[in-house]
Every structure is written in C-alpha cells, then in structure tokens.
Length: 176
Image 1 (cartoon, rainbow, N blue to C red):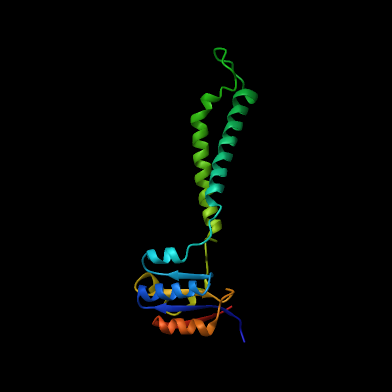
Image 2 (tube, rainbow, N blue to C red):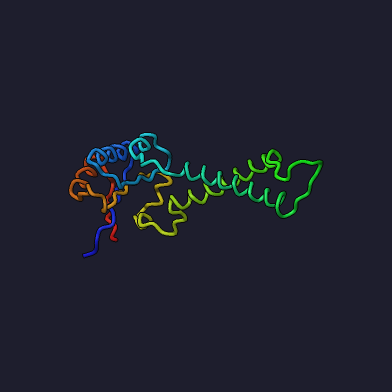
C-alpha cells in the first residue's frame, strides 16, 4: 500500500470552495492550497500564511549594495587611483551619493527577485497536483482544493464529509 501524499477536491463554484476551505480552517488544517481561475478575496483571508523575512532581507540586500558601492568608489578614488583635484579630499562622499542610491536599488531588486524565487521554491518543474484529472480547468472554470496528508489535522473521513457537504465534484487521492 502506498502512502498518501494529498487529497485534491474539485468544486464547481467558488462559494463551495470557500465553504470547504473555511470548514477545514475551523478544524485547524494548515497545509491547504487552493487553485482558482481568478483571485478570490475570501480565500486570501482564510489562507493567510506566516509573515516572511522577505522585506527585511530585501532591505539588507539594498544596504549591502550601498556598502559595496561605497567601498568600490572609495577604493577607486582614494586608494587605487588617487587624484587631488582642487585640494578636495580623496574620499569625498557627497559625490558618491547618486551612485550609492543606484547600487542600493539594483542590489535590492536583484536580491528581492532571487529571494522571491527561493522562498516560493521556483521554478517548479513538477508538482503532484498536475496529475489530477482535468486540473488544467483550474485556469478556466473549476476550483481545486489541495489538502496535504502531512497536516497534523488531516482526517480522510472528515474530509470526505466536508467534500460531500460542500458539493465537491470529485475527490482525488494522490500517492506519495
């Protein structure tokens, strides 16, 4: 007997999907995902995840860019190729400010993009939900609910009851 990876329920209306998601969240399920052809505001409230460190890490990438830009400009102006122009100091930081801003922005954007990919485990070349029959309809007219079997509150019988009560079209069990 193979281990169960997840159960995927297909719904015909967004109201049924929201009702099933709400009931699962009331029971304490945390490892659930929904797939819909359009954004559903009620699901955003139900599936709120934990806060990520992404904003802080993006800020740190920008700060690292500013530091690297300053070190690079200071090294070039004061150490590697010092030129005394009009008695000004070699490390005149006000001249560095526009470039430091650009370094900070470029590093923050690049770091943010790479961290976004990392946090979302992208690119995904395979996901088990793609094996569900008619899953491509999630981009047109069907609504799918993924319930991970590793969730502490996972109960196959209760899940079947919820699916019947919420008018699920089909339940698909995915093996690990």
